[in-house]
Image (cartoon, rainbow, N blue to C red):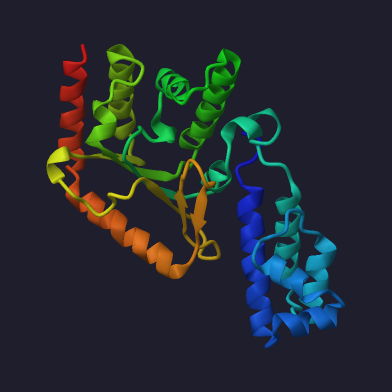
Length: 285
C-alpha cells in the first residue's frame, strides 16, 4: 500500500472538525456563509462531508471567520485538507473492481466487527473462494473475475501491516455449510480461517444453526471503529441492489453495537468455534 491513511476518512474528520469550530464560534451555518460570502449550501455541504476535493484556502477562510487562531490547530486542519485531496491506494485500476467505499473506511480502522450471514467475510476469503463467489454472482468474464479477486486480496493487506486493525468476525453456520467452489476449495477456506483466527488481532466465532432466531436475522453488517475520538464509529451494510449504506448517527451506532453484542452472545465461543472449524475441515477431506 502506498498510503496508510484514507483520504475519505481524513475528509470526514475535517468536516466534523469544521462543524465543531463553527459551533464553538456561536455561528449558524447561514451566518457563517454570509461572513464568508458563500451560499449557505456550501457550508452545509462541507459539514455533511458532501465535498470531494477540499481546498486549503476554503479551510483557512473558515478558520479565520470562526476565530481559530491556534497555529497547531490551523496547521492540522490544513494538513487534513491536503491529505483529503490525495488519491487513495485503491484508486486507478483497482477502484472499479473494489466497488463501493468500504475499502476507504477499512484502511484507517483500528477495529472491525463484522457479522456475515451467507458468506465468509471478504477480509478472510481465499483467492479460490472469492473466485467462486464472483462466478456464482454471474461474473462470467474470466478477466473480470481475476481483476476482482486481485482487488479483494489487495483489501486484505490491511491485516498484514505493522499495526493491523483488530478484526472480530461472527460467521453464520449457513455460510460455512455452503460448498462454495466445491469441497476442496471450501476446505482450504476453512483451514485459512483457522490460521487467521490464531493471530492475536483476529477473532472468529461461529453462529450455529442451533442458536435459532437471533438479533440480526435481517442480515450482515460491519462496524468500523477508529483510533481517534475525532472519527466516530461507522456501520456498513451491503444492500446489493440499492447501493451500500453507511450509518453514522449515534442512535444507529448504538443500535447496531447492541445487535452485534447480542449476536456474539448467541455464537459459539472462540475456542468452540475453532474446534467446530477443525471438525468441518476434517469432514471436507
